[in-house]
Every structure is written in structure tokens, then in C-alpha cells.
Length: 500
Image 1 (cartoon, rainbow, N blue to C red):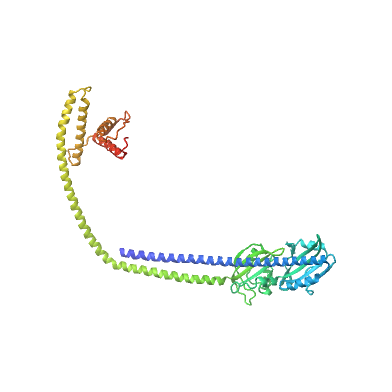
Image 2 (cartoon, rainbow, N blue to C red):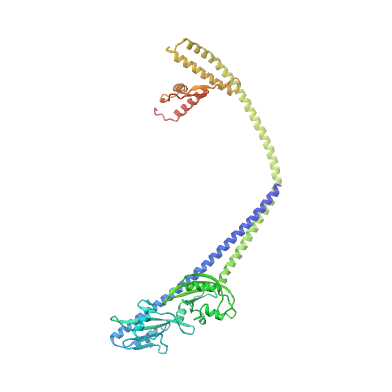
């Protein structure tokens, strides 16, 4: 029965241990999955912030160039050389990889110069008032003004930087530069690879794609145009993502969408992290997208590894439990034999202890008999002392000189008799009886201290402070004396030898 219970116990323990390992493995996997996803989101968000910072730095660099161009034109006008056309040409050639066109409008002479000559004018400004009105909707940065993004041609967006030229506080003209957004993307974000399918894209605050690795996607409204082209697809999660982005928030999102513009669109799971950056008068959204499956591959690999490890551990533990069960079965016979020998040894030991106890009992009986004999001898001595002292007390008066000494002899002999009674009680003498009576505490304490004074060392003295009217107590006088004497002895032994 015990063997069966032990086997059942080990089986239960093995099952519980296996379940515990499975639970720990599952928790470890979920934590790993969560950490991997968080790391991926943080990595994508960092990339989006770096791209946003790059776009902002690029724009500020172009603003500095335009401001420098404005200073050159101002000096040219002051010197009267009128080389604005040549200055614009040199500026355009030097910055052709960043700037599509540069134009100078002279409000004083009502003239215009631009380069390249063949490109259509970005803005038509006929007067200072038109310029000032236009500036109200532009963003001012370091003395220049940035306009909103707009489509300059199919799949190509741009924005303008305007630099007013002042001489002695008077507005005499304005420089207009047109920056190519596709060129910005090629310089800053195109080469950034995020996995096999991942990419960086930029949208304006209206949800229009203005930067994308696929030029045909530039100009698309993320939702409206795609719904028109693919009306049967599910856009619910994409709509939630776009709503978050158009609010100007920063964050990460896991959603289901499609890889555009594959011939056969299949729904896939994506990561996207995004941030906003103020380039023009409205913010842009910099988004970094990658496939969830690339991260899921690492997660599945970890799941496979942890499953193998858990199964291996469970197998080892199960095998160990079965080995232990077999060892228990093998040792059961040895345990029975050992228990049998142990019982024999215990019986022998018990018999030996009983013999020792019997020997001690006989010894105590002998000591008791001897003690009883001695006590009787002392009683024989004390009896005449008590008798003669009582007879003398009967002949003396209280005022006699020797009355107190004889009274003390009588009292001490009575206490000695009580002690003999206690000894007789120890020796199992049935005739020894403990006598109890009402005692005046004050007198018992006084007599005990008087006796103790004869026992204590010379360098210790007693200061008595006994309260009157302590009342009486029902007790054995000898025992009460012994208690008080023991207390006094314990006290003086604990004191330092300093005459207290």
C-alpha cells in the first residue's frame, strides 16, 4: 500500500513538474515575443526620427543657401552691376541636385530672372502686396518662408522657399526656389532598407504620399485613391493607422494591409512606426514599414528552440522519476530487513535501560532508608532540646534577661524539626507530614533575616525596611523560612564586594 502511494505521488509530481515547465516555457515565449516586437517598433521609430531629422536638416541647409543667395543679389544691386541673371545661373548649376529652379522677382523694376529658363514659374507675384499676403500662409524660418507641398508633375511633388530682399528696410524683390521632394527622398531615405520588403515613405498632413520608393505611388491618397483602385479590399486597420498619423501623433502600429502594387494582392501583417516633422506650413508624416513575418520568423525559431528544450527537460525529469521508483522498489526489501534489525536493537536497548532504572531505584531506596535513619537520630537529639527549652520558658518571664535567647533556641529547634520532617518526606516516610498554619509574615521575615545575619560575610550588611501590618499567610513555616533565606543568599552572591 505504501509502495503504491509512493508511486502515485511520484507520478503526480512528474505531471505537475511537466505542467510547470510548459507554463514557464509559454511565459518565456510570450515575454520574448513581446520584447522582440517592442525592439522592432523602437528600431523603426528611431529610423523614422532619423529620416525626419535628415529632412529638416536638408531643408535648413537649403534655406541657408537661399539666404546667402539673397545677400549676393543685395550686394549686386547696391554695386549697380546688375548680374542677377548670372548669379542665379551659377547658383542653379551648383545646386542642381537639390533645387529644381530659382527665380528673382524685382519689384522696383518690375522684372524677373530665373534659371533654368525653360521651367515654368512656381509662383506669379506681381507686387509687394501680393507677396506680403502670400507670406501669411507660409512658415517663416531664419528670414525665409516655406510654402506647402504641391504636385509639380505626375508622381512628383515640390515646395517653394521664398527669400525677401531688403535694402535699407525697403522690400525690393524676392527670391523663389523650388525644391524637388523626390530628390530629397533619393538623398536621404531611398537607400534605407528595412528587411526584405520594408521601406520609408513620407505623407503630407492631408494623407497624400509625397515620397515613396515606387514613384508611381507618389501622389496617391493613402485611402481614397486605393479604395477607388481596389474597392474590394479590407482597409479597416489601415484607416485606424491613417487616423493616428493625421492627428500628428508619434507611435507604432501593427496592422493588416497589402504590398502595393503587386499584381496579386495578398493580405499581410505589417509593422509601421511613424513621426511627424514640420518642414512646410503643415507637418509631414515620416513612416517606416516592414513585414511582420520577418520578425515572426525569429519568434517561431525561438518557439521551436524552447519547445525542444522543454520536451528534453520533461523527458529527463520523467526518466529520473522512473529510476527513483525502481530504486524505491529495490530498496524496499532492504528497508524491511533494516527495520527488523532496528526493532531487535531497540528491544535490547529498552531492556538495558530498564535494568539501569531498576538499579537506580534500588540505590534511591537505600539512600532513602539511610536518610530516614539519620533523620530519626536528629529527632532524638531535637526532642530534649525542644522539651527543656519549653520548660525553661515556662519558668522565665518576658522581662527576664535570658527569655529571648531561650525563645530563639526553642524556635530554631522547631524549625529543625520541620526540616527533619521534609527529609523524612523525601525518604518516603509516610509518618512525615508537612504542617501548614497561619503565620505572621512580618515576624517570619524578621526571624529569617536574623538567622541570615549569622550566615552572611562580614563585608555585607542588611538594611531592613519591613512594612508593618503585612498580615498573615497560610503556609509551612520551614518552607517559608527557606524561601526567604534562598532569596537573601542569591542577592548577596550577585552583589559586588563593596560594603553595601
